[in-house]
Length: 171
Image (cartoon, rainbow, N blue to C red; front, top):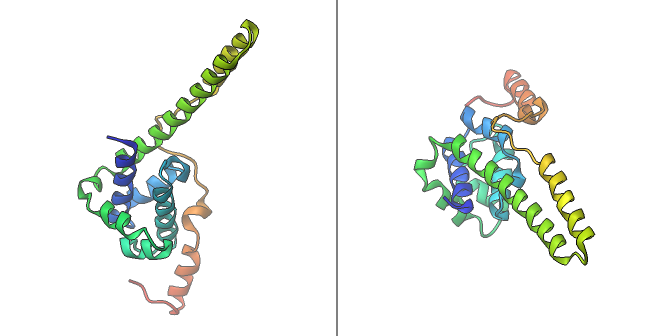
């Protein structure tokens, strides 16, 4: 599965599962920068914003909030009905792919430094820097990431209070 297919599967799964608990688990697992495709990153952030506001996410509402050019992407993503049950799996793939892109970029930078080195000392310095970078590189298979409670409950207390006071109807 390509990076783009995995990212599209996550978007489709989020749109199809809406306010399901797995959606909020994905928000805790997957930072927006894990999406390599800018449009999917923007769609993800809008889905997250709408979900955290307690709204059902709909491909048309998400696309409308983002502007021209997003409707085709959101509608196409919801055509991936097979992605919904495996949402967390595809989110973990996107997270892993993000890690791999970062590692690849780090190694490419080290190779550039090595190739442009003018002498053996500079080549050794490039290798030592790569060794140091690799030691700092880490990927956790743990699918949980810390998320501040305010991020997940943003606006929910106000919404609940509004419903309790009769200013807003429950669904």
